[in-house]
Image 1 (cartoon, rainbow, N blue to C red):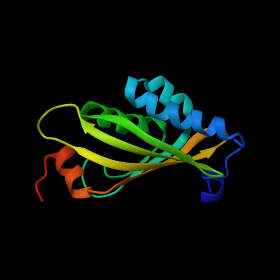
Image 2: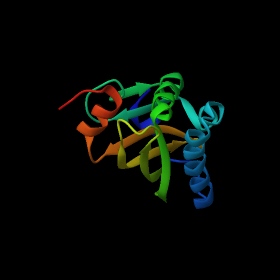
Image 3: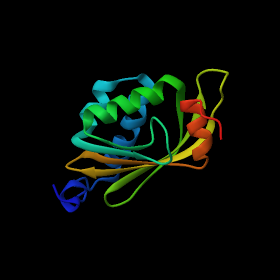
Image 4: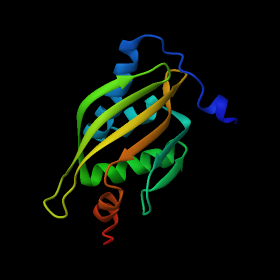
Length: 142
């Protein structure tokens, strides 16, 4: 599938529907509702994370994306700062917080979700402290 087709423009024109999709994405994480997550992503969805380590890189397909989401949910709670949207994307400003006292993580991240046919087709997560997140998830000292 070409990149143009895979990451094609959103067919959602209503801003409220884009905001709803962004909220559902975060709700799926908060409630560990993997059926909800699967219902709002495409089967060929990809998720890209920066850096090196177990969760870094690109996950391809709904199953891999959900597996990555489960790894995040084991260690972090996600708190929404705000949602922004564009023609074909929904961007979430999120604060990650540790679920355990050690090790700790308190990271502001941005996640941009591309939309195709009313569902999320691409997830792009941005960290301000890539080495810190690797240490947190993989236990790798830098």
